[in-house]
Length: 293
Image 1 (cartoon, rainbow, N blue to C red):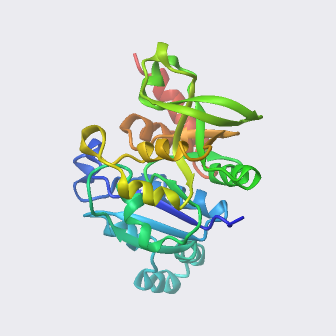
Image 2: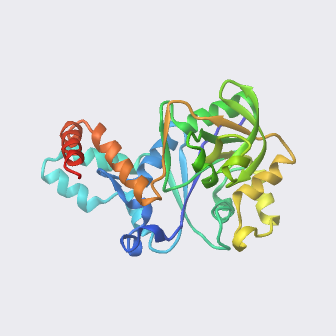
Image 3: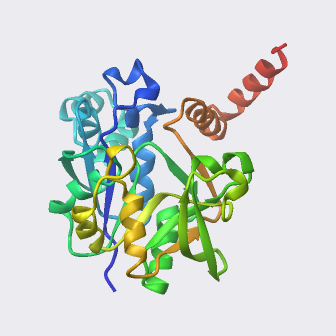
């Protein structure tokens, strides 16, 4: 069985929900304390055994490339200033993985960056995960997905249970058949169903472990809703050829950092857990909430 070593991270979106900040700054580079969102996404991949990251970018995304590259002028400055801890920290970023950058071309839709990544892909299964959201879990979400693939040899989608029924209409909800523990065979995926008509409360979302066959499917696939090329449509075609599994991620919390409110919640969560400032922030938040009338 092929070892999973490659991950595609689409990062070409314009980030219109965060304008005007994203007029000149990629949404993926918005900071969570002292690291950009996309750092956490890459870190999750690396901790799961991924060694090559394919970043599919668009206009105004150069800062993403700069972030994962060496900055020799800054390194020299830190070296002269005796800031060894900071020096090692920024040098380690460039060593996280081998990075490949591809400029996105083609129709709108989340299937397009996967298709654009084809020249950099090996003829082996690979990961797709978005650059502006992540699940923080132990073990990492992608490691849990790879473990399921190695056991069953099937494509895998990460899944989370949506406890608030009203929120089911925001996600692709899976009709599933239990396989074992937190693993399910997906019978179908209903996109953004009305809460009362949802087949379950299991959202298949955020990360995908897919076979090379998905590229050929995307090449032949017609654009769908909104004239866009959708990865979920290609997965539905794939499901006609082989079983696709979902794994409900254990010990995880989903952070949708592409949403303003959820981004702020993420910053607060990570801030309160921070070893240097967490206690002080918690005290501040408590007082701030008490002062709200």
